[in-house]
View (tube, rainbow, N blue to C red):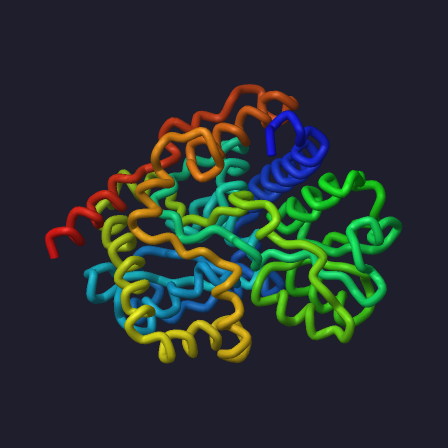
Length: 359
């Protein structure tokens, strides 16, 4: 889809995302101590399963199939094998993980390219060092019985977490069907609460990502209207560090990239054991988790190397990021074009690839 064909969708989505990021950034910066001790803040309920006792590299991740391998790395001591101490921190709310990285209260996070570019536009200084995956169906718009097409959503209540990729996916689907955001009654809810509201009959449709898709589809008669598989390349996911950490501890960043690929090898060699670990972290059965594999494309080393190369399609990270930043500037959401010249750092993936060739 060409950039010029997306003015309404991108402007509404990016404006919401940017305004929300900047607002939360300011609030977190001015009242970080209060938020840290607040029992109602998902970030304050982060769980750390590492043996480092809270020390070491602070890595955030949340409920997404492409990021559950980090749990395998932790439980199978793969971080230790690569000589890196990791404080693995789970976030119940994805947006909270993004804002915690923005305020540098963690060193790295698992997040989408969309949200990373938005954070940089808001003043953050972050670096993408690894492509975890692309969503190829695990982000879905799900509707209740009687709603059989996108057009049937007109006048209906549709829930999603405001500003996230599933909100963006919803808007893309509406535009493809010739509809406007005003044609529906949008209900902004955190992803888990959105799924619960849908199952409870409080909304007519919902935009969620796996594993919350499983919860939503338990409503009798519910069905998928469309998903990220209908918009290839729209939702890429990455390992993102603060630039300060990359500059100060490049050897630890390398160890994390090495650990990721070692984990993928371990998963391939031990599918039953690792599937159980990831399903437990997701809170679903092993059979349910197996279905997620169809909707998430985990990137190999070779696919990582290709993604970091310049290109003229969304398969290229630089193309996708520049497309987003150009639009931010075009619609006036950023006074100056965000500097993305140092956003992508492929040296760690390249170093791993070289080591893999020699082994």
